Picture (cartoon, rainbow, N blue to C red):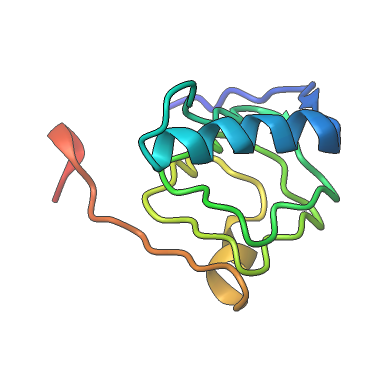
Length: 107
């Protein structure tokens, strides 16, 4: 299997990130106007996600270097190829709950 490497990532501002997370939180709480947060292949380095509801968000290939995830709720995330995944799993602060694999790749 050949690995595909991305050389550029979309860089989000704190304002854009906060707006996307607010829509995600609306969706998660069942309110009108909500939308799933998709941060696939985005550079979120140094941004603040602390205390936010991010369950079911898509962080595929995201760069989270020095992002603040303290107290964030991170259940059932898509973290495929996420840069900083080992730190998310090792350090406290973020409320991370991994779900068992679903679909044809399930054990």
